[in-house]
Each structure stands twice: as C-alpha cells, then as structure tokens.
Length: 335
Image 1: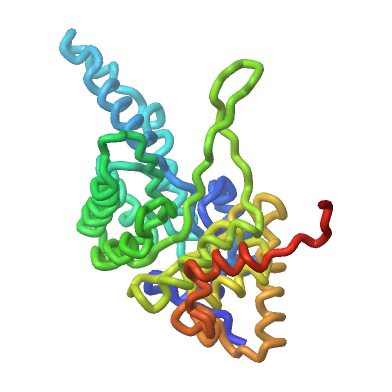
Image 2 (image 1 turned 180 degrees about the vertical axis):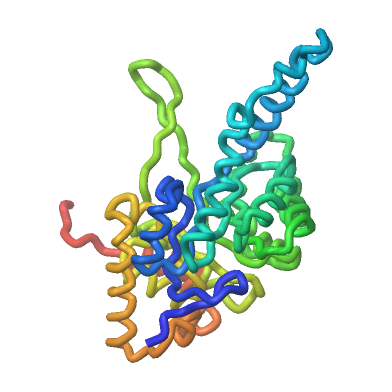
C-alpha cells in the first residue's frame, strides 16, 4: 500500500503533515514528528512584526550615540542582544534540516510586502525546502474595495516568488467574495500550493477587566467541512497543489480530504490535544480504510469524490444547502 504523495514538487512518505504550531519550536519535536510518520513539517510562523522589531532595534543600537564622540563604537551591542527571534528561526531551519530527512517548510506570517522578500531569501539560504506565506489579513477599512484586498495577496505572492527559487505556498482565509476567482488569480500568479484554510482567532471580552483579550480555540472535526468543500470544487480547475488544514483529527478526516482532492492534510490541534504520536493513529486509520476499500495508493484516491468526479457535482454548491435545510429532521421532537 503506497501512502506517498507529492506536494510542492517534493515526494512525501505520507500525506500527513505537521502544520505550523509551537510544537515545531524544538528540533527534538520535529524529529519525533518524522519518527511518528509525518510527511513534512511546517515550522511555526515568524511574524512580520518580529522582523520589523528586530530591524528597528538594530537600527537604534547601531545609531544611538554615534554622533557623540570617538568612543561611540563601544555602544555597539553584542549580536545576541538584537538577533533574537528572526535569527533563531533561521538557526532552527538549519538544525532541523541537519536532523531530519523529511521536507522542512518555513512559514512567514504578515500582511504586507515589507521585509518579507528579504527574509524569504534568508530562509531559502538557511535551507528551507519551501515557504508557506500565511497572510493573516482582516480588512477593516470601509473605503478598501474587495479588489484592493485581493491585490494585496497577489502583490505579496509576486514579490516573494521573484525573490526565491524554492516552492511557495499561500495559506488563505475563506473570506473572499469569490474564493474560486481568488484561487485562480493566485494560480495564474505562480503559487505552488494553496493551504485551505487559515483560522481567524477572534478576540473575546473579559467582563471583569472590560478588556479585549485573545481567545484560542482548537479546531474540531467539524471544521474540516469548509476546506473539504473548496478543495472538492478547486480540484482539477487549478494547477497548484491543495493542502487541507483545520479539522484533521483522524484517519477518516484525512481520507475525506484526500478523496476531495487534497495533496496533503495538515494537523495542529489534533497534535496539541493528543501529542505528536497521534500521527501514527491517524496513519493507521488511513491505511485501514484504504485496505477495506481496496485502494492501493493515495494517488488513486485523490480527487475521486471531487466536484469533477462526484455522482452529484451540485452537492458541492447551492443544491447541497437547499437539500440540507429541507431534508433535516431532528432526532426527537419536543414540540
């Protein structure tokens, strides 16, 4: 039974990928992911704000007091004082690449071109096999049109693709007026893969302090319905690879997304809840389903229940919505 797959031009031993999370901050954890059967790892995201903060801090240290007197050179800080986040990230790429055979994908999280291109090159030089652009962008300006929002993504993609030679994936939110059109625009722009979908962590309000506070809720299996829908629709319509993320907790979840057309299925919440060795459990479930249903390879499965190949293609669209609402009956009647 062949569970290998191809993603971003690389052959992976498995379609089960450890997506960006705090678990990948440790090389030991990354090695455990490979030992548990992961096909690849996406490192935790480096945020645009961290790159900017490092640049501003370095600027300050190198210029502070230099106009005062000749001894100003003594004001220069030791490298470790300003090479905090970003340089440690590059070192993690190097150490991970030296420790594992599976692909190591670096992740950049931001909203503007800014220092992305410069740091993308540094990630490539450090040995990253590919780059995932995690564009976390909430448009709140009422004067900003949807076309302008979409152009931001396209401009970021073009700038990074021009700066590096390694494959580039883009992790998107589902909040576009026409997700299919956006996917096609990015595909035409040369994106190597689309990662569907980014989860927005909406804030909460603390009723005691009356302050807005972050509130992280891990995904559940129900969250896979959205990527399942759009991967099923996009399969065969764009050239870019399709990665499913959010809601992958079991072998059955991975099976569904591969049948819809995913090249890989990514996990974070399941590993945070159950530990890194949960990858083995998910792979076991995938293999058991393939054996029962007489599939010899993941490639044979992929896309066989996409919109292109489904017996009822309209089930991916409005007809599914209508059927769900008109045929649903509660398990018991209280009225």
